[in-house]
Amino acid sequence: MEPSRKLIDELYRERVVRARQMPPEQKLLAGARLFDRSCRIMADGIRDEYPTASDQRVREILDERLSLIRHLEEST
Image (cartoon, rainbow, N blue to C red; front, top):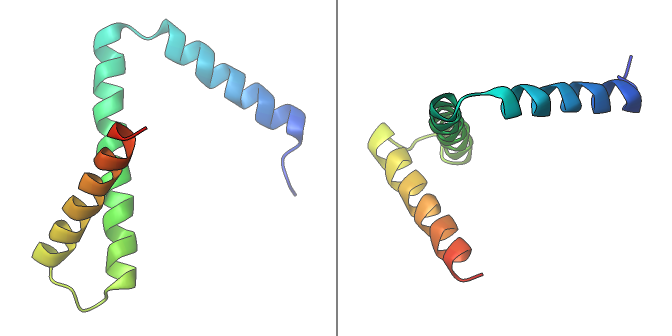
């Protein structure tokens, strides 16, 4: 069963309200956790793309992709 649009919107609003109530230091920590989680997901994708790559090579590819993202963000 798919969630309704109304339910999705309500869950989103609840997350926004919680985020707005969060003290600044918690927001900073949440940002760092989100970045770490994103890096883990990217690394998992790299491992799927390059199954024989070593952990070191996965990290190198991840660093290259993060550098590319930073470059693209700076050029806009």
